[in-house]
Amino acid sequence: QKLEAYLGLKLLDRTTRRVDLTAVGRDFLPRARALVQDMTQAVERLKDMSLRSRGNFTLACIPSMTTHVLPELFREYAHGFPENRIRLLDGSSNEVRDAVLGGRAELGIAVQGDRHPDLQETPLFADPLVFICREPHPLQDRTSVTWSDMRDTELIGVSSFMATRIFMDYQLARRGIRLQSHYEVQHHATAVNLVAAGVGGAILPSSTFQPGDRPGVRKIALTHPVVRRKVTLLQPRRSTLSPAAQAFRGLLLKAPAPR
Image (tube, rainbow, N blue to C red; front, side):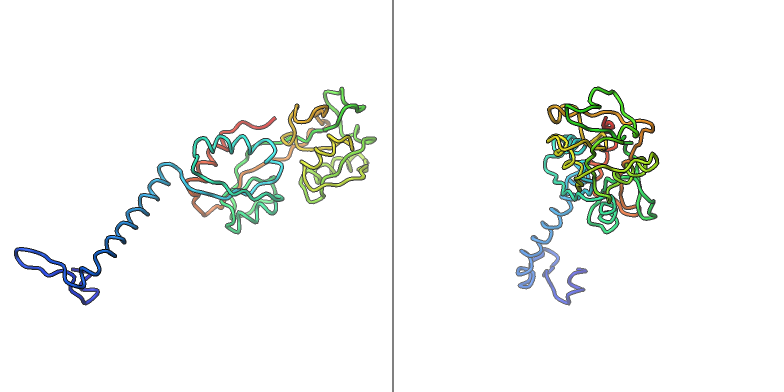
């Protein structure tokens, strides 16, 4: 009756004994059924997303997380939510922040930086810088090395835009050590490839390399001082995560810190 009043048309002929569709009502009935079916399916889809955390989401992260940390999480996530899909945007910490702030990613993983009022930051783990070299090397049998030991070591440089390079340059400068390198790369994975090829050593976050990744390549603790980059999880402060992103966030926060 409300629809008839809104349309100014009769859809049903009513008597005390029966109700029949009018000609307009008969024409409208298939469309009405389709509308109800579409609405029912849409509501069920939303209900399914809520109950089973189904859906797709975009994650922005620094490239070093894709070496060891994220592959394990992705496998676990795929096992628990096989129908979900993750779109991965890898870039610098600043690019990760911009992606989350701009709504291009629901979650971001970056090195801790300046606080932003529109971002919620959750600490994940502290990632110490280590020295990586290929055998044979004068420092290969040491259980730890110091920053001063880098004085005569050929180091593969990482881009000055990366947080790792900022930490490294500061510690070397404090000791009056000038970086000796004929090579500079953009990504940690490229540095590992060059180390494995015998080009030189590298100072990298510990999570980017695990013993056994490359034959003959050693990871040695770097001390005096131990320098750690702090990795954080970013999300918009005033936005609600989708069920799919919320499920991944839960797995990430429960994951053990890499060694």
